[in-house]
Amino acid sequence: MTLQIHDWQALTRLTGGQSFTVERVRLDETGIAVEGAFTPPPLARLSAEDQVFVAAFIRSHGSIKAMEQMFGVSYPTIKARISRIAAALDFVETSPAPAKADTLDRLERGEINVEEAIAALGGRP
Image 1 (cartoon, one colour):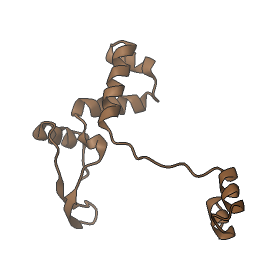
Image 2 (tube, rainbow, N blue to C red):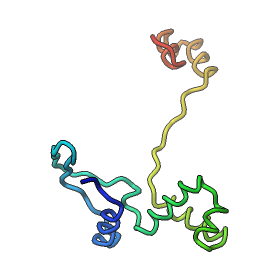
Image 3 (cartoon, rainbow, N blue to C red):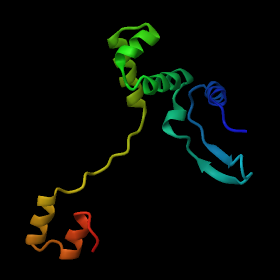
Image 4 (tube, rainbow, N blue to C red):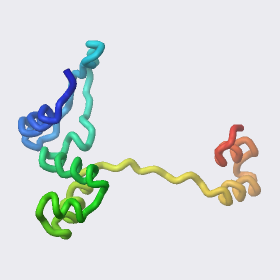
């Protein structure tokens, strides 16, 4: 049996918003179980109401106007809720790839060799 949305809602009510750790995961199709300490994904840690809100936001393709109509609230209310949910989610920080000019400048200064420059530019060394 696959995990249903109401299962997450029940888990959210059970935990009362407290953080929790999953210690066992079983794959339904194979029956394989893995034990350890697993942190639930960020969306699963949101309240059931916020999960519904996020799902509605995705289904409306991010249209705040559609969200206003769906929930019967104003633009500022939708924006405030989005901001509150966004603040509760951890985002992965990524460093952008260096600009081609930066890579070529580093190569010219001798900071990197040709193979490293090719790799940085997306080619193969």
